[in-house]
Length: 246
Image 1 (spheres, rainbow, N blue to C red):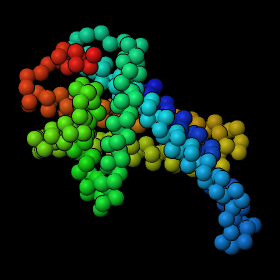
Image 2 (image 1 turned 135 degrees about the vertical axis):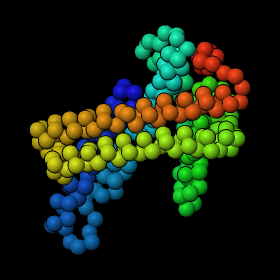
Image 3 (image 1 turned 30 degrees about the horizontal axis):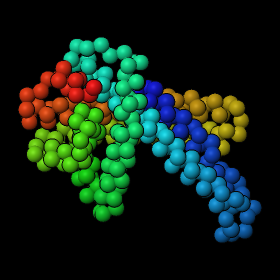
Image 4 (image 1 turned 120 degrees about the horizontal axis):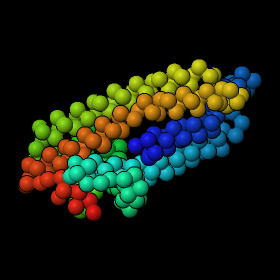
């Protein structure tokens, strides 16, 4: 989780802060005519969007490696089998692109649902919460299978996923708030001096590590919930689930 969730997120935050043109725009606003756009506005906005969108997609691939690797480690440890870091990452790399693709599709569906008065998005977030584990263990129809699991045992899965979501939201809000407060202390242009730049990097690194429990809670919570759903359908054990991962 440190290698695949915390580190990429911290690097993306530092890069995004470095290319953020808002400090430059604020300085130009004092001397520019009222209503005039800053110099190179379109190019700078395009660069920022390219960094944010492109960086998020790349980070998503790395995070998919971590999700697959972490699921493999947890399942093998539950079965009493060895699980080295090297083997875990090797497994994660094999499954990353597929998991990333399904995650993008699920995110798109949830985003469309949010556009329709938010509640459909919340429903889809819960109904599709098992899509990742389904892909890793069953590798067939993750979206349809997740919907079926959700509706077959609505109360059970809703309660489990809501608890996971609550833990993730609380930890994420706390770490994001601390990052905002910490980086604001270095001014609107923290990369103007080496000292401020170093301070901002340290703050972002620390707050990214503080978000680690959210990543762990989400992965472990959803994985255990998936195993529980499988157990309600038919007898299942840890060695069997480990064998399904391959």
